[in-house]
Length: 587
Image (tube, rainbow, N blue to C red; front, side, top):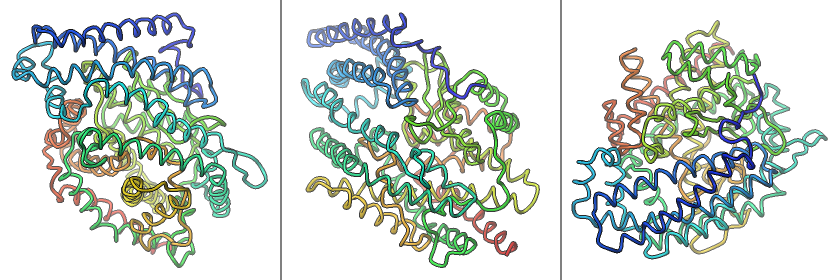
């Protein structure tokens, strides 16, 4: 089993004749769509013109996705790869040329009084019914004339460049730990080390390294958020949050129901953290460096081969199709496993439609949490797998629903692992690991939402330097974690290391959505058994072509009701009670 992914099935390099030809074809298609958009000003047959526009967009989407995904994967594996960075810039510059013709197409299409009737009656267009309904709904936010192309081109040297800077400085900043130089992904992995002194020393080394990069990170943050505010003002959105919700096809009513239920359960999470703190010898809540401290008797390290066998075995109990795809990911070099200097931190999965596969990046060090992370990312891969027969423009799903399959995979793994636990000590380790994750998607995600809300509220009037951003971060953590954390040991630099902040939208709350939504789905699976699996796959296939609320209805769920979200949170509360009883029994 190779330690690194194999990108050759996409392209064998930037000089690969297939890559060169696709770049040439893309340039030709861009000329075609520019000429096509000019015809929209003349009288034309609506049906023929609609079909021609969609066909062109499909061709361009397929080319762009292959070219850009390849360059992005190359750069993620090695942020010092100058050729990858150069090619990404070139592709993005070309792709920006789509913005104006696409905007012209959408403005023209949305003005057709018979648009939806034409779409619903034509076999070629009918799969795009949801897309066209959104085009009609959102047409009022389009920028006139060359506005869309200008914004797209400016973002290349604006928000996209600032985001690339954050990725570069966090992946290359040297970290001094116990007299030796290491990197940020490696030092952050030590937060899970069983040795308390290692965790504390690693945390202090991590915090110290941010002082070297806090200034450029602050400039990146301020610039990206100001660009977002400007974009919203020009388009007529009331706020970045309104834009986010419309782009992600979910309602504010759903978001409010979810956050309202989360706020009700915050005291329960603080109970868990204080119980853990006491067990670890802390009197005033958990210091940040012990948030991920392992407890119980789950200290065995796994190799990548062990992880393959473990995950394939567990998913075989749920669904053969999922288990086979997981085995394929390990056996056919979809995964880049281990941390190294210059490699992007964290973990992600990218679907590669052209080869009907995905690619997964992790920073695996063998801990059980890393196995769960693999399961999470392979859930994304399975979501991509379920969409492989969708039309090209129907293969992207909104961020809130993007975490459904990934978090559902976590539920499958953790439920099986807890059930198979050999003793209370191992059960404690597994439950505590799951509560760590639950605390992240509830308390930490809520703190990130509060932080980002504060950043947007302040950015209109002022530039926030690093100390100001650190203050906003710790204030958000206090409001979310409360007395569950030791207020004298928070993480003021979380805004530096999390790439989620360095985009135009509220990227964080989908993790809470996905975590609670998946728990609700898993609870239904436990009730319905095998008969639930086809319904689950259909739900995943529906994610690109329906509003979040309608996707949930496939599984008979009402997202606008607090009761649904409370039900998911109560499953976590029950685990907290079990955790506290296991800790008390072991004292």
